[in-house]
Length: 166
Image 1 (tube, rainbow, N blue to C red):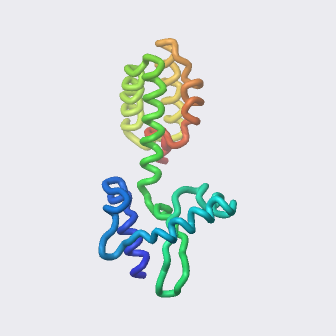
Image 2: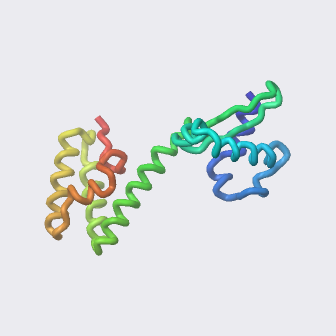
Image 3: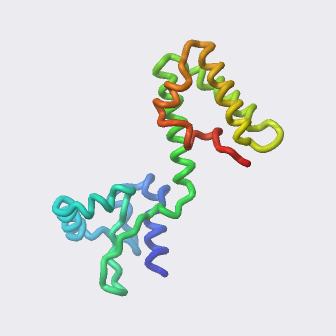
């Protein structure tokens, strides 16, 4: 479908991050200003649009082939979302420790996790528990409560290095 290919190209994350507004316009992509105004008025009038946007960004595209509007979630099929979320959680972890004056602890934890996850064999549930116990000991050694820090970042799920590989 040519329309979908145009949308994917026009809304690629690197392109959207490097350009803004008018600079996004090209021979195959244009901004429909009266449509933007109409869509904005719909968002404030109906809760359906608010519900639609809760799951993330959406793009409304007028498809001239069928003379109808299509709603598309641009990055639903993007594998990099998981990587970005993990990186975001790792930054949050580092920022939290830095705010506590314990940035060095973050780097020691990274070294510990690299050792634990790169040892021979798969990173199993048992090895994960061993890494968590070692992390608790490392943190306790400098007076930081591991469980409180992990709760502060929303748990271990999605934290890079803690994924079980087998």
